[in-house]
Picture 1 (cartoon, rainbow, N blue to C red):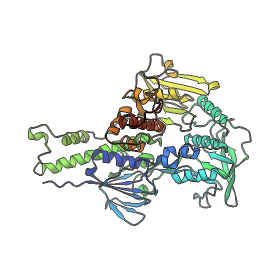
Picture 2 (cartoon, rainbow, N blue to C red; picture 1 turned 90 degrees about the vertical axis):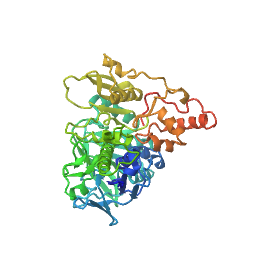
Picture 3 (tube, one colour; picture 1 turned 30 degrees about the vertical axis):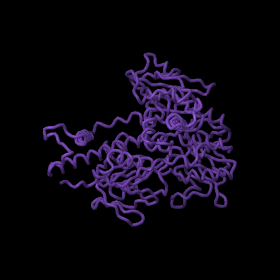
Picture 4 (tube, rainbow, N blue to C red; picture 1 turned 135 degrees about the horizontal axis):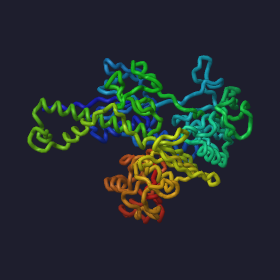
Length: 559
C-alpha cells in the first residue's frame, strides 16, 4: 500500500495572481496539495483592476471581492506577511513568528506604488513619507482613502499619465472634482499610444473636464500644516500639450494621487539569496535560477521575456505553474506506485491494459517540460482602459515604434468623432492593434488578436467592420448562441454559464466562483447578472425576463 503525501506548497501573496494559482491547483487536484497562503492584506482577494472604478464611484467595494479558493487542503492566513525564507531548511517565517515548511515556494508578492523622490513625499533619508492628502492607488485601502478625500476637496492632481492615471483622472472628474493630470510625456499613455492616438485621447479627457499638463513633471509637493496643498511643476520631456500655465508653476490641490508606476516587491527574495534585478529573476519555467524549488509569478517576477504588469500575464503564469506542479505530483505518484503493489483502480501502461485516466493525465503533464525556447504569451498583453464611456484598447504591436519588416499597418484617424483605430498585420494575422473611441471595433480586434483569426486580404476592413462573423446584439439571452463569449478575460461562454447553473449555481457570485466570469476587467458583470436572472426565470419557474435583460454582443464580452 502506498501512502499518499500531498505536495506542500507555500504561496506568499494573496492578490489576484497568488489566489489564482491556488484556484488553479485546487481545480486540478485539491487532495494532491497541502497549500498555505500568506497574505499581507487583511482581506479576501479582490479585483485590483477595478480599484479605479471604485474611485470613480462606478463600482462598490463589495463588488470587487473575488471568489476565495479554499477547502480542507488550503490554509489562508490573511493579514499575515512573510518576513523571511530559509531555503536550506525549506521554511518561511511569517510576521507572527510561525514557521511554515514547504516542498515548493511560490512568491507572488506583487508590487508597490512608485513614490517619486520629491520634496514633500520623502523624508531626509529618502524614505517615502506621504503627507495627508497624498495617496497612491494600489490597494483597497488606497481607493477608500481617495474616495474619502474627494469629498473634502474640490481640486485634485493626478501624477502620472499612464493607464491608471488616465482612469483615476477620468473617474475623479466624473465625481465633480477639478482634476489636473500631470505627465512628462507629450501625450497620455505614451507607452501604448502613438502621437495621433494620444492626441485623440487627450481631447477626450479635456471633454470630460480634465486639465492636462503634459511635457511637465512635478518637482515638489507643497505641504502646509501636514497636508498637501499643491504641486509645483518643472519641465518634462518636452511637448506643448498642456492646457495653460508655465512649465514652472504651482497647481493648487488638496488631493494628490500618485500613479507613476510600480516597483516589484523583491525584498524577501533578495534577503533569501535569490537573484533579483528589477524583479525576481526567473526562467521560462518561472523557477529561480538559484533554487528550482522557488518560483515567482505576477508583478514581482522578471521572466526572460520581460513583464508588462498586466493581470492576464500573471494569470497565464499561474496556469503554467499549476500545470508544472501538477506534473510533479503525477511523476511522484508514478514513482511511488512502482515501488508498491499497484492499487486495483490505478492501471499503468506495463500492466497490459489501457492506463487509467489519472496516469494518462499525469504522463501528459509530465511531458510538458520547460524549455529555453521561450513561452508564447500572446493574448496576455491586451491593455484595456477601464473608464466608463472612455474606450481605449491596445495590444501587441502598438504605440510608438520603428517600422518592422513584414508588418503592414492601416489606420483610421477621425479626430472629430474622437476615434482612432490602427491595425497591424503580418503573415495573414493581426499582430497588433490600437483602438480609441470605438468599443465595438476594439472587441472584434481583441477577439481576432487573441484567437489568431485570419484577417481580410485588405486589412482596411478591420477598421470598421466586425472581424469575426457574429450575431447582432441579442434582444434576449434566449437568442444568444451557446458559444457566444460573455467574459473574454476568462473565455467564458453562455454555455459555460448555463452548465454551471445546471450544476447548482444560483447567483452571479456562484457563477463567478465556478467559471471566473466577472473576475477580470469586470465589464461583463451586467451580462452575467442578466443571464442569471434569465436562467432563474426560465429554469427555476420565476417571472419572465424582460427583453434585453442580458443584452450581450455575441463575440464582444470583455470582462
